[in-house]
Image (cartoon, rainbow, N blue to C red; front, top):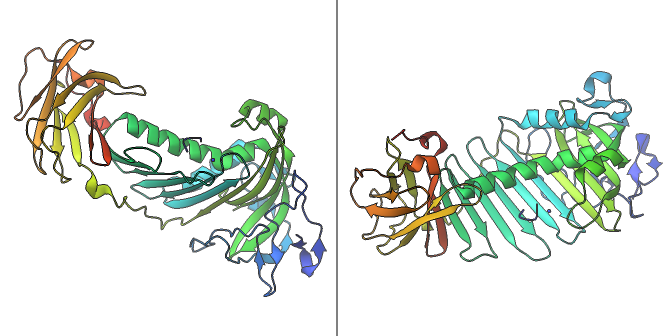
Length: 401
């Protein structure tokens, strides 16, 4: 994650006591009646859109139709009974079961700690984009995950842009961050908190089960361990809105740690079925190289599939891929590689002490190293873009030669 973060209107319009957060302030998420009779969240953060799944901008007034009513047994999602959340794992699985195979958008804001972070995930049917911002430093990281292409932007790095194709360490890192973010929100909060059912409400035409946080699950907190130097989670207050099918639409929570630190979390899901992440606008600066292995796995072909020309004298580093890539050797391009053109890399010697060679026409080297056993990747720099080129997983087996 480091890489990556008043009063409620009761039935019939009567007032109910405000919910007190762990730090003694009013917990967010209790809708407050506005002068026009609509309601907005206690901290001014809007909920996502309802049945049409439009994205409601932060700060927009949203509706939560009153009065709240007791949910029928068949309206309670998996892992929830009349008393509250009894199986957070089952509820989390139901949540991801609804999202699986669909496009959606997730927005998260975590404030109040030493590293306040906001995250936006646009999950399309064929691509994913992540935008992560540290509010205190202004550092921004963006990741785009396509079928075989990964791009990364980090405003604090030089060069700030990375283009990756195929199975590379960059692909592993991007998928890891994506998986961690989906795991943390909302599963971590559901697991470490304790929740009771607080009736059903209708928000933008959609019926939701409202859950109120009542504290923390001490066993789960011990299993989770400390978080980013804040210490152990000590208390939790706020609201969670869940559809009967288990989709967690929104969370508005305050958390207090035994160190005395407090954080606020806003989480919202929207855009179900109509989210399409856009490719980064700088992609035209990248050398759109694609990697493939010969049938016997000894020759790695790099083809310029339409990106900018890679100039002569560009230095390429050939590595054994994985979590911690190992340098196999380096070469310098003798000629530019324009769109539609290819170069060929191979290695002689042994896998532990290879000598990397480059050719402009496809070679047939004798006794060459079987690169398919090394998960090869090739890296270099062109302008403000680092590029890392590997071979797609389904093309990485090569032969037995």
